[in-house]
Image 1 (cartoon, rainbow, N blue to C red):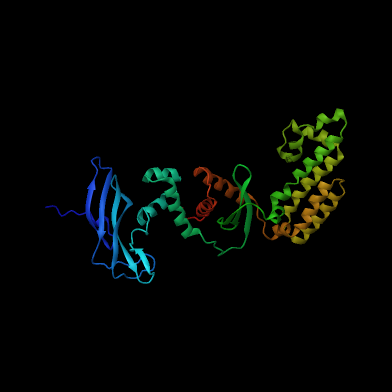
Image 2: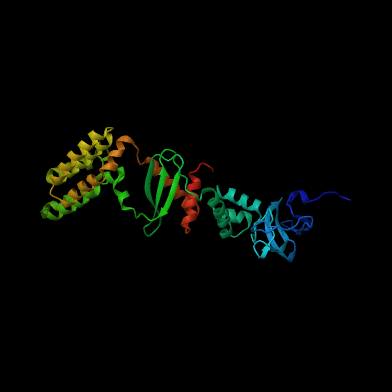
Length: 362
C-alpha cells in the first residue's frame, strides 16, 4: 500500500485533509478539509476560545495550483458562540481570512504577480475575476503603502498629472532627492502652487502670444499676413529656429517694437535660473519687473506682479537648484502605469500603484 500523502502540501493548522479528487483531464483538483478536533475553535474576531460549536458549514476556497491543476479547497468551518463578542462567529484559520474565497498564500502570489503584470493578465493566469484580483492587490498595497511616510523628507517637488480625458487631474508630491512619490491627491485646487516653479515662470510665452494677438488686430491690412503663423516663431528658442524661420522672425520684430521688447524680456528672464545668490537673483528680478512695467500691456504687468507675489518660492532656487527633469520622468512613468492597467477608475488604487512603483520594491 502506498504511503504517499498530499498532506504536506497543505500544512494548515486546525484542519486536516480528508479526501481529494482530480478531474479526468487533470486540470482541476478538489481537496476536502475538515476541522481537526484536537484543536478547540477560537473566534476569528477576538481570538477567544469557544466552549461549544453552534453549527458546521462549508465554503469553497481557491488555493495555489498543484502542478497544472487548479486547487479548490472544500473547507468545513465551525461556527461558534463567542463568549467575549456575545454573538455567533466563524472560527479562526491561519491559512484563509474569514469569508475570503482565496487562501493567504494564493493572495500573496497574486500580489507579487501584480507588481509585474497588468490586472487582466494576472486574472487570466489564475482564472479569477479581474475585480477579485484588483481587490486582493489593493488590500496588500494598503497594508504596505497606505500610510504617508514622512521620514527623510527635505526637498519636495509638486506637479499635476492628467489621468483621464476631460481635464481630470491629480496632484503629485515627490521626494525630490530620492525620487519616491510621497502623496497623490485628486484635483489641483491649491492655486498657490501654480506660480512657483521654473515651468510656470518660463511660461511667459503665453503672455507673448496674447500681446501678439493684440498687435495683430491693430496692424494695417497689408501687414496682417506677417503675424499669421508667427506664434511659435516667438515661443521658440533662437537656437531651435530653422534657417527659413530666422529671417521671418527678424522681419516681424523689426516691424513691431512692442513684440521685440516682449521677446527680449522672454529670453532675459531665463537668466534668473543662473543665479546662486539670493540677493543677486532678487536684484535681477526687480530689474526685470521694471522693464516689464514699461511695456503698455496689462497682461505683462500682471505677469510681473505674479513674479513679485511668488518671489519667495522663485528665489529658493538659489538654495535648491532643482529642475523639472525629475518631475517629467516621474510623469512619464505614471502615464505608463495608467496605460498598463487600462486606465484606473479607482483613484485610490491608482495612487497606491504609483507609490509602489516609485518605492523600489518592484
